[in-house]
Length: 270
Image (cartoon, rainbow, N blue to C red; front, side, top):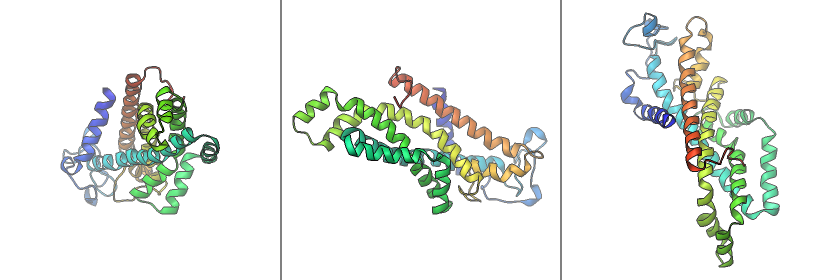
């Protein structure tokens, strides 16, 4: 419940960003640049201070919530759809199809995940859609392995064998008898992937291949503020704290779903 509350609060903040934020995320005023937060002698109009361009930090954090959550959730959707499709296909068909698809996954596993995302983002260019696609394509094999493992455990079950004996087509068996029985562990597995995608977006933005200014994300806020770490540490601490809270919230939600859907499931890959 605590994880669900945290995730819900951040989703609502992201959806209602234009109404919650007191200022536009790109509204600049150099006369009030680098103002401290309220607890360090700042002013009520900018309770979390301002950045080097005089932009309101709180408003940029609010808008950055929308961007970072979109990247985290939709990149997992891309990876999940592609990886689950290939994993179910490999697990159900077996033989050469299984060897080929898992061989491709193993080859991709040999490269660091974030390096692949950086290469894909560099090829397509920076931007929201490119970041989502890059993170999704760089991590599909994780979902493929999880879906394949679950499919192998369901493929020889009695109801699947009965459907096959009655002459049901493979596509119907997969859609009606295999997928419904593997969706629970995949849902849990998905929740554990979201925080890492949000952190990966922060990494891409930090190296200049993520969300481009003036559109804020927690990652590019960290990147742009690193030069002020010693003089104005709140510029780095606040987006970092937001990243930490969301990551913890989603992980707590995943733990709760795992315990409720299947208390015996300690590792979704097994």
